[in-house]
Length: 484
Ligand code: GLN
Image 1 (cartoon, rainbow, N blue to C red):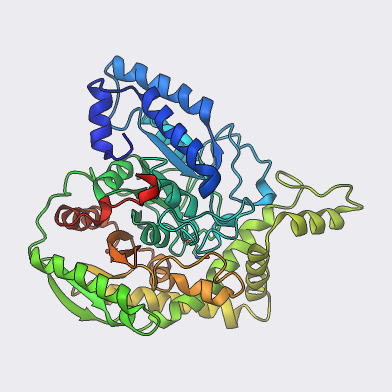
Image 2 (spheres, rainbow, N blue to C red; image 1 turned 90 degrees about the horizontal axis):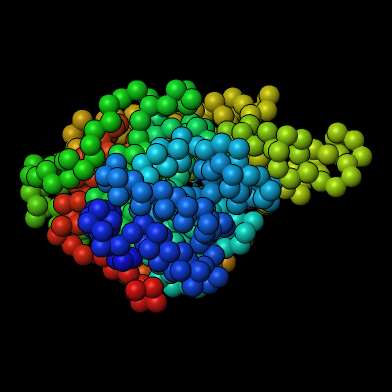
C-alpha cells in the first residue's frame, strides 16, 4: 500500500479494495516499527487517526467522499492542531495543546484526510538539519548516520521511509525544498500569500510559507488543491484564483525557456551535484525546452540579508513566549523579571537564543539603519534580479542544495556553515516567489534535488514542469532499501 501514489490510493479507497481504517492502520504500524530509529514523529495520533479514518470510510460508503478522503498524512509540528500537542519542537511549547486548528489543518480535515501525527522539525523552524529540535535529531532514511535536512526534517524522513503518503512542511528559507532534496522528495514552496499562515507558528512572518512534501508532482498538486486559497484570518494571504493544480500537469514543455543562473553553479557547489543537475536540465532540452545562462547578480547578498531579516522578525514573534500566557514557565519565580528571564532561558534552545539576540540587536535604535534597513534594501535588489530574469525565461533551474545529506553533527558547531546549506533557496523566500525541489539523481547513494523557481503564482507551471520530468525519469520512485 505504501508505494502507491495518492490517485492510486484514492482509487483503491473508492472501489473498496481496502478501507481508510486498513490504510491508516498500515501506516501506523510502519510508524510504530520505524519511528524509534528515525525520530520523525513527535506525536503519533493513533486513536484519533483511526477515528478520522472511520468517518472517512462512512463518507466513502455514502458516496460523499472527495478525492483525498480517507488518505492519511503527517503534519509538521508547526501547524496548530486542536486537542493535539503542537510544540514547534521547542521545550517552550512542549506542553501546548492547541485549542484551535490552523487553516491548513482545517481545510485538510474538511477534505476528509486522516492525520497520522505531528512531525519533528528544527526548533521553531530554525535550522537546516533538524538537529536543533528539543525532541532530538531526525535521521535520514537513506543513511541513518546523516541528517534529513531541515527544518521540515521529520516530514521528509517520514516520507522517505514511507511512514506517510504525503506531508505538510513550511519553508522560510528553504525548509521544504532542502529536506526534499536530501531525502529524494518533491517539495513545493508556493508564492508568499498563496496559503494561509493562520495557526502556523510564526518564525519570520514575511518569509514563512506552507507547502506539500510529496512523492511526486501529481501528489503535490492534489494537496495544493486543498491547501491554497485566501483566508480572511491571515492579512497576508492573497485573493487570487486557485486553479485545479492537476489540470495542467501534462501540458507540453515545447518552447519552455529555462534560465540557469551562473551564480548557482559557482564555488561551494559539489561538482557531482552540479553534474547531476546539468543532466536533469538535458532531459528538459529533450522535451523541447531551451536553456540559457542568466545572472542574478545580487545572489551573494541573500544569506546575509536573510540572517538579518529572519532573526529580526523572529525576535519579535517569539516575544510572546514569556511564561505568562502559554508554554513553559519556570518554577517558583521571585518576581516578574525573574519569571521572564528564567522561563525564556530554560524554554529556548541555543540556536533560537542566537537568533533572538541577533534580531534584537539589528532592530535596536542606533543599529536599525545599518542592519535592518540595509537588509530591506538588499532584499529589494534580490527581488529585482528575479523580475529582470523573468523577462527572458519562464522558469529558473539550479541545485536545491550545494551538497547531498551531511553527517549528523557535522555542522552543529559552526552556524555559518549550517546557514550556507540554504544558499540557493533563501533568495526565493526573500523575493516571495514559488520554488520546488524534485529528485534528480544520486551521488554515492544519496539523493540530489533539482530546484525549479517560477514567477509569482506560477505553482501550476512548476508542477507541470516537474511532472513532465517525472514521466521521463524514475528517480522519484527510488526508496531506501531498509524501508521498501
Ligand atoms: N535553514 C534556514 C534557517 O535556519 C531556513 C529555515 C526555514 O526555512 N524554516 O533559518
